[in-house]
Image (cartoon, rainbow, N blue to C red; front, side, top):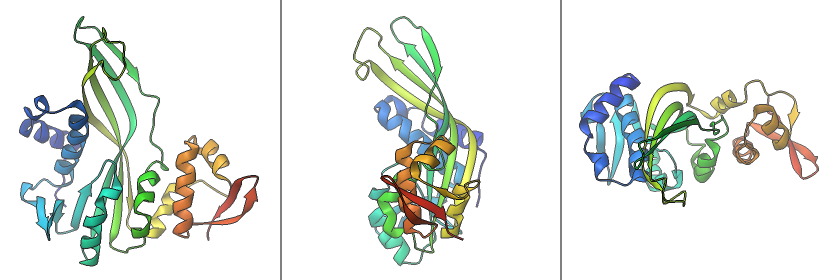
Length: 247
């Protein structure tokens, strides 16, 4: 692959799209920017981006395979996956997640700036919310995943005179500052990487507490891992299934 550094990718994207953000809503901007920067990051050659494959366009197609960068809504990929996988293409879904986020609020009336750190941190179990939407595809040998955990800064322009929290937000832009971690899932056995340090028997409640993760994320993750035969159910404790990792 012909990758760039994250800084080089960001500079290329901003240079090529510096006027785009003036024409779009803040929701479109913040999602498209991370998508576009990662497209530049994973493929330096512009000729390998937005490549026609059948009746679809792949974000990236190069000597390694097809790359689709998807921040959410994995279910929207089903038609593409049906075609790509049955054609024997090696498919990589790149899923960006926010590990740490610094937020700056700018009041356009007063110019006042306030900063805070987001309390949300994506965990190793966070991607499973999206994987669950395409669970029936996960056993394909030619489907792979790249979970890329980013530290980002987000700048929000607000009108503090408007008391409604949603309506006072005028624009929002996210910039990836650093790659905190990357997890490569090349085959089913690689899902074990997400359970490093987990031993013995556990329920979703116990695992969420031990890993400081959201219990909903852990429950969905264990549902998918059970489907993939990475974990097995060995009974119940109250209303929770009791699990252990398969040998």
